[in-house]
Length: 412
Image 1 (cartoon, rainbow, N blue to C red):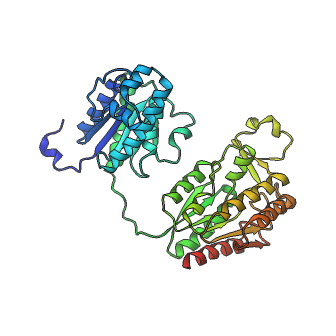
Image 2: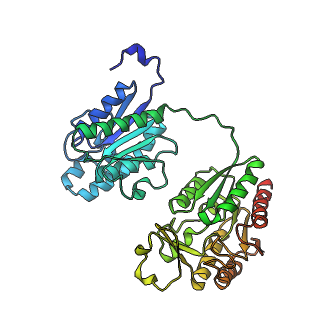
Image 3: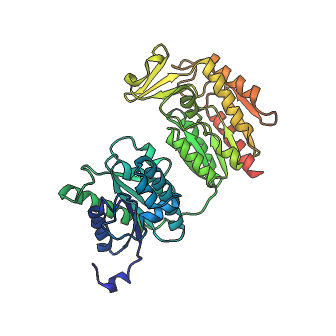
């Protein structure tokens, strides 16, 4: 421990440690010591239900269980592992947000295997964007989408199981403590506050979004671009709901093709809901709805074997959407836009919705595009304008028209 006089010179940060202290006490005692050795405080929250904690917590497992709607005794008596997981997961998410809002901690660190990762990351996802969050997990080298969601959680692979402190795990745990302390100590950069816009982008619409972003920035807006990879679209939707944006430049709606057909980059059925819910002005284009995304060609389901494909790179395979799929996608986009009471406009590029969907390119299919456009026009509310232009989605004239329309909406 450092001398007391040293603490007075520091801007002390409090790091919440979330974990099962009946089985992981040694590991949490180690990181607690590392945090205190670096001159900060640890705030320990117990989520263990099997036995009594072997490290004294600041918040007990009984308090977590109560936040989840039951008592620790009831969980122990029932001996239902699945139910206990559900209760503690719900409880810690509720309690973590309450404790953070009460300024009990500045950052959060957790260590765990499968169950520990589920419980701790539920707490982390409940915290605001920007709160430092580090999860040391046995699962961190795989697909972590279920744990991270749309949050900014740092997942650190534990390498060995979270079972004791040894020469390998001690290094990992110390690194994790250092990482969360470093983030907690980092001051927010002083940036000039500007109104913000959201924009959706894919590799096939990069030229369009880049040009539009430059236009918006010249007009005094800060533009946050979200890659339409499923998580990107879902994150954009969440931040719209959180009130970050004055307007939405949603010209890459490709995630809906994956949601409808069964691709790997879906953002879920709520994609395109947030702007309507929050009455945020938006410009919508059917960018990249010519394609459904899969991983390497060998991963494409057999039922699609007769379809048209394009190998974007060794790990990404694109499948051309059909006339029937495009008609359904057009109706979906219209239905989403119809829910908004804020200004909305559709832009339809008659020479293709992506770089691949252009005259002479691999996915050029005017019939499929026409089915998409007709469905939009037939189903959208009469007062929502639909602009058809004889351009590809990446053409300068088309991009400028979309950007000007959103700026017009914002100026009103």
